[in-house]
Image (cartoon, rainbow, N blue to C red):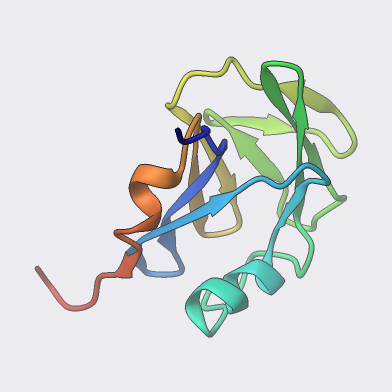
Length: 123
């Protein structure tokens, strides 16, 4: 028996597509340069803060809070203002942009976790 692991997929960072799955732990997940360095070995996004956005699990949702980043956080194309918290709708198509990185919130990252990769080149 497996359990769903809500999380985010990094689908773009800097100047190239990505595919990195990250579960949101019970104490939350901080999106930013620190996480990009851990996932990619480098933070190739010059517009993302070290600690840019906080994701926190909530009942049947995930709350998002901008950590007063310089370039802001966008949820489904709309700016999220500094300390506001917004519960996600829970569908797998919520898009979060931090700097030049794009994340997609998914209800379960386990199907993607085995396929984590970086795409390079023109293909």
